[in-house]
Length: 462
Ligand code: HEM
Image (cartoon, rainbow, N blue to C red; front, top):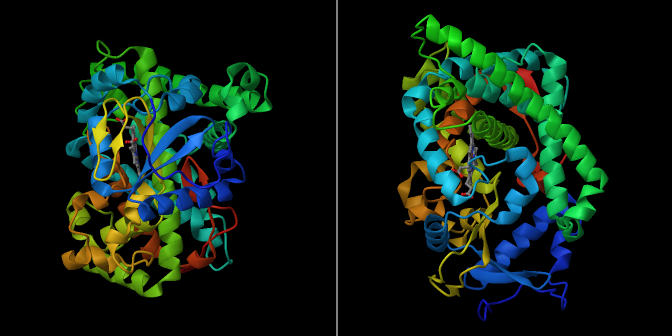
């Protein structure tokens, strides 16, 4: 069905479509995502590009994005096709029928009481990070990306599965590299339409690397599951009333509803979505805080007011009082969204503000476009945490803040993410003065956005 008479992104070639959008380095991919989003906001917030002869919508209006994502729960099948082996039928890629059932079961495992019981781990992990960074203090710039990713992977493994991979350094590194490589192989495949054809992809080196790394991640989840089944029995036999219970234990209580394979796949989904995203936000946030010393001082002032001068742990009561820190995190995620876009299949013809989207087509929802929409005002491109503390400086429309998606299929880990990021920042900023150079940073897109390599921070003891 012809999707309508909408502006098409320039550069379309007959039969090949906008093939040039798929070429280039991960840095160039990000530049193109931005350009397509800007093209959309300048052309009524709905445009198209072509993948070969297949038309694809791109939307950037906040209400339209909310409408599309709330009324269609179908993520593009291509995501599932590429990641079937890795993520199986987990939340991120499951078809709607499976997703509905699983999300209903998993939702309660992310409730506030469960998350509050994780604060002890968020604190101990943050202290661990501060200790690990001690040798970098005063030594010039260092690669904070790897350190943060490793630390958040450990945290997610601890809270998801109750398993401590922190002391097994090699295993930890190997898992981290495996998750990273699998994700980047999926993206490399996405950028090369030739590799969409299974028989070509199956013969490629990319596939060999993917298989190798998927095995490592599956070994991790299998090991975790085996140990936890044994441990879980013990805990149950001892009638332990411990407050802290990792997600996995809660899922194991539901074994009649979820098979072992379901649980393994959900674990892989939570580990992947959990560690790459929150470590990415922390990365950007530290670079920004390091670039704006006044923001850093305000954070520290607030931390001292809320927690006092003592080096004590952050409590759940402190969380809601750390308002400026929350504003800094929100502004970081607005300016540098780690998930800059997502997608839906349009299941029914849908009237948006300026166009009708036709059933059956793929629609790219540009979260970057929404978060940097002109609705944010003249200072849209500036880092200004203060805007979050002054309602007159925020857009009237609540849909303009779509960092965690919209509707029922939004991010299940959003509160978890905010909590763990806040606790980590408190510990880091209390221990170190951070310097960075945000304006020299270039971003790369590998499904999620990260700073391109080489944009490090430096730290000094306070
Ligand atoms: C700041 C960090 C994070 C950001 C910006 C983020 C962003 C998002 C977004 C935009 C989506 C929705 C995509 C869509 O609707 O198509 C999503 C989904 C999801 N996120 Fe997050 N996320 C973050 C942290 C986390 C964490 C920490 C976890 C787990 C511990 C997590 C688990 C998930 C899962 C499982 C889904 C799929 C939900 C479903 O389909 O039901 N995320 N995330």
